[in-house]
Image 1 (cartoon, rainbow, N blue to C red):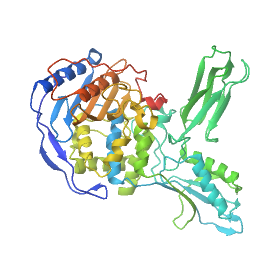
Image 2 (cartoon, one colour; image 1 turned 180 degrees about the vertical axis):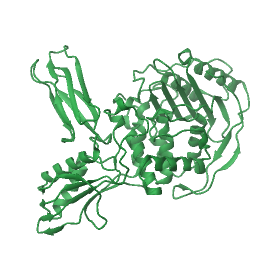
Image 3 (cartoon, rainbow, N blue to C red; image 1 turned 90 degrees about the horizontal axis):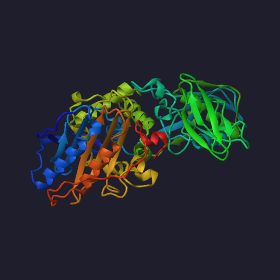
Image 4 (cartoon, rainbow, N blue to C red; image 1 turned 90 degrees about the vertical axis):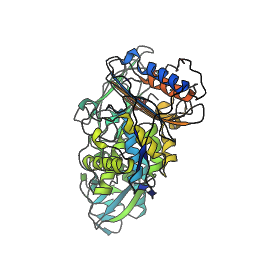
Length: 526
């Protein structure tokens, strides 16, 4: 590891905001290290000890701690080192999306047609047009179907045409690993999709496995919502109590075939989330089923295409505003939401719903609205799933500080995971961490975990009531996890006081059994 360095860094003061969008370049001023005293020297010594933990030997560590109000640097260790941020990338994506799209931005899904009516018969196509909404549930498609039925349509002679053209047709993000493809945290991104429940994991289905009544019988498999967008091959069996081998649910690479294998104990259950290869086809299938349930018969097939400009709208659904979407997005570290926001920024600003367009807007806003030197970093997606994202913690600290002056900050701050808060939609990915410490209910921060990469960045109030900003990144470690080191730093900051004595503090944090190679929410483990 590189040794810790002290230097004068640059602080950023947010420019003026009009309607949530930054219109003026930030003012630059000097950041100076905080004056040396016994308390700050002891804080430095204690944090140096944590960062120098032997578990990081051969790896990399970078840490920045600043006074949120003044920008004074309390501690830093390689603050300019570019490291994989993992899901700390979402801090940049979410902040810029709130700037560019605005907190009241919504996504609209419509049903439209150019066909003429003959009584209850619609003689032509029905277009299901996606607006990028990652929160569309089966019940929302049922509501659209109910609106169509209420308009008097009973028969559609043509196709139901799935229109996902708002976004580009590249489904998977830059540099995503091919073997992540079946898992729901790497679900294909589409402007027209379905989420199976209110975690809003768009583009996935839930696969539930329950045992038969007797050992040796086939297990039962159900898919939520019901759909033909995936084909289930059930090879799972029922085992005697305590004799089950466990259930494996795998989608074969490049196909829609989901194979369920293994054995499940009598009285046990198993649940998995699996990505769907073609989200638009999935949405069309769910919608056609809903039409049928509402008494509307479709004679044609489902197909793909663009909605004609002259089409008249028969039904529509508007999503929750972006400020509300921030809760499931940030609390549960939802990758799909991040990528939708990147593509939506591209569509709204550049009329091109692609990763390239959206990432260019992200970087432009970071430069002009936050004063970030984007030449020192690499952004390959919006979620942090790419291992070619490279960001210095000093950049993340800058975004955290400038964001405090945004009109949307309070909602964003509350959307961050909160340490030790057991409610899943409050504590999020930090719900099990730092419980019973000075950081519990105090630290609001974004987690980030990939194999060999971990990060934690956000806000903490110290013992004197002073708000601090911190960004912690560890990369290239080979075994275990470094979240306990991140927690020790956060707890030490929560305990810090200018009046404390120059006495070494040993920081203990509760042991937490969480995955060490992915975000805990991606495995539904938190």
